[in-house]
Amino acid sequence: MALHAEAALLLLGLLLGFLGLWGLCRAPASTPAQAQSWPPGPRPLPFLGNLHLLDMRQLDRSLMELAECYGPVFTVHLGVQKTVVLTGFEAVRAALVGTGQELADRPPIPIFQFIQGGRGIFFSSGARWRVARQFTIRTLHGLGVGRAPTAHKVLAELEWLVAELDNYRGQPFPLPMLGWAPSNITFALLFGQRFDYRDPLFVSLLGLIDEVMVLLGSPSLQMFNIFPRLGALLQLHQPVLRKIEKVRAILVTLLEARRRHVLAGGTVQGYVDALILQDQREETPGPFSEADMVACILDMVMAGTETTSATLQWAALLMGRYPSVQGRAQAELDRVLGLRQPGPADQAALPYTNAVLHEVQRYITLLPHVPRQAAAPIHLGTYLLPQGTPVIPLLTSVLLDKTKWETPDHFNPGHFLDTKGQFVKRPAFLPFSAGRRVCVGESLARIELFLLFASLLQRFHLQPPPGVHADTLDSTPAPAFTMRPRAQALCAVPRKR
Image (tube, rainbow, N blue to C red):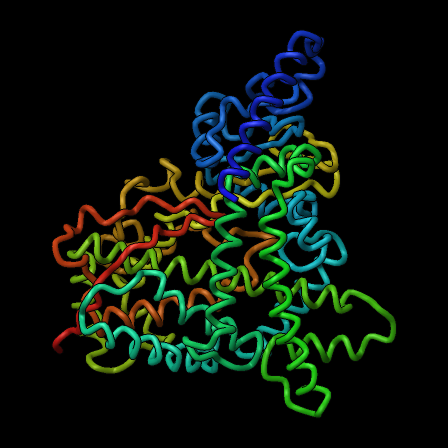
């Protein structure tokens, strides 16, 4: 499988190189009028565009380097697709918050068109997206997300995770294990029940999600999205589609089980139950058809497990790497809480712990960019872009903006503290994006991460395995759709309090 993928990529590269050279010889020069209709940017090669200037493994960093030359709003050619890139807090926030519905659409990303067909919550657009999003927000609120009921579920799940960590008795455990609790919280919210960590369905689903995320971030899938016809010819999308079908089969099985519960008169216990009830109310197939329901569930499963799980793993890894930061947070937790479990209301009384968690989210830039598309002609700065223009609001450039953060490239909880040690909100803290497309699970993620992180620090010293120095813990992201940490081991040594 790996050799086949490498051969396909090599063939793709050679073919694109030939087409680029051939087109360069035949292409007419652009006229000044054409150049002035878009923001500035590097001159593209025919067919290849600006791919020769970009490192697809770190696309966000490559785009930030181009911004140094062309400014915060510039044009880049991803193959033949002209795309506008926004960098820095001012440009990104103005576009996300100040444009309303004009920049609320998603471009038709080829791989997600294959997977979801324009359905779901995250990669849909227009009326279908608005209906699905409004339903999801309303349902999550009704299930108690962001309020006491959710906090109780999070703390209950924490005990299962603590029991697993206790089994290691301070010896090295695999870092991805910390993702079990956030994933199960998501599953409980969706399906109305938690799963045992050894349940084959739970293990299989987490394994498939992991494989899908790695494949979505692979160079072959990025090339497929840029050159979909050529990528389809080389079958670059087939490995991830096969994994997605396995995920979808599991979700359909769970959906049918919940359908039997709801049709038997059972109470609504999760998001899927609410979807089924909504479907029953539709007199004709509408936005909550079977395919739409599965698409919404797939989006919630993939996003709800990956993002929070990866962030908690990063938080633990960075505590192992920066023991002095961990020690100061633990001293604050001991002073304020003692042996009492943390609650949502404790965030205000734990400014340093809160600052550490915010800095983790800023520093890791978990989801560097998800593109938007102009739903109508739109003004961005002094430029008028036509309807259908893809736009990349580069969140990495906001979270690392040199004009907004004192030490943007360093892990520094002081970014969120004033001179008196009190927590301060920073406008440039946008890990969940902003505006009409802000993450629907933001309130859940915030409270979930705070309770899990604070509770783990209360109970354990998180440190490198024996013989490993803190400085050598690997903090370079693993190649995947999100900037997740590389799989490695930590020790959770019980604290004596």
